[in-house]
Length: 191
Image 1 (cartoon, rainbow, N blue to C red):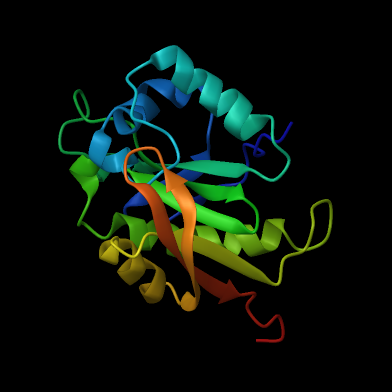
Image 2 (cartoon, helix red, strand yellow):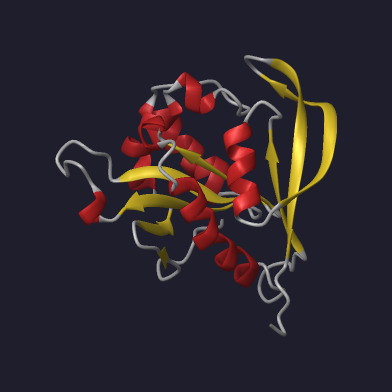
């Protein structure tokens, strides 16, 4: 079982990245029930809180190559702390060395994904550095050719297009899709 140690966090000017917990399910289900958020994933949208809890447990905590965090807005950036979700997104290594993120649609277009990825990548390379966990010389992010906004985020964070795979992903809504594979090399440790 892989649960991220609670002391592993990253902070930016607007965000806190902290380990995903089962108690985050109420906010995670807000993303999982939105068809636009889930459109390019391998699972259908669902507002089922129990299934979301199962996904957090079995899909994240019970797999050795999954290492996930939540993206929280820091208190000074919340519009209304009584109605805004605490967790606005997820980020992590979904199947290391593959990394990815998902944001609540209410927070798209505000630069949060780029900010979160910039904060997460040093955590990823530090965690997967050959100690207790396997060492990866690169991180990989997969995106649909249609998702130009995700491609922009990846490029801003210094990922580069590595390859295009044709019809290699079966999406439950869109059918067989091409995949753009982006990679980021491990930073030079001498720098």
